[in-house]
Length: 174
Image (cartoon, rainbow, N blue to C red):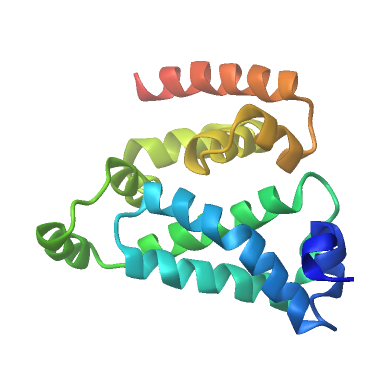
C-alpha cells in the first residue's frame, strides 16, 4: 500500500521498518508544521532545524504515540516543544543581535520569557490539568478541539479548565 493511501497511524506503525513511511508522514505534515512554526518564530533557519528535530523524534520513537488524539496533534506537540527548547537554549544576546536582522515575533518573546519571571511562577502554581490546557491552547496554539484530542478530554472540559486557569492566573499576576 502506498503512503498516500495509508492512515497516519498505519504510517507511524511502519516508520521503523519502512523508511518510505517516514517520508510519507513528512510529506503529509511538514508543510503545515512549517507554516504554524513560522508564525511563532521568525527565523527560517530555526524553523528548519525544528522540523528536522521533530521528524527525527518521530523516527526514533514512533511508539511514543499512544493512540490518543490525532497523529497530527502529536506531531505538533513534538514540534512546538522542540521550538521552545531551541529558543530557550539561544542566548539572549543572540536574540538581541538577531533582532537587527529579523523582526522577532511577540510570541517568540513570550516563549523565551515563559520560564522566567512572574509568568513562570504563575504557570507553576497551576495544577497539572490546568497547566496542560494552557500549554496546549496558549503556548502550542492548538484549537479547543485539537487540545481536546491531544489531551484525551472532552472539548467542554478544555474550555472549563481554561476558564479556571485564566481566573487563577489573573489572581497570581495581579
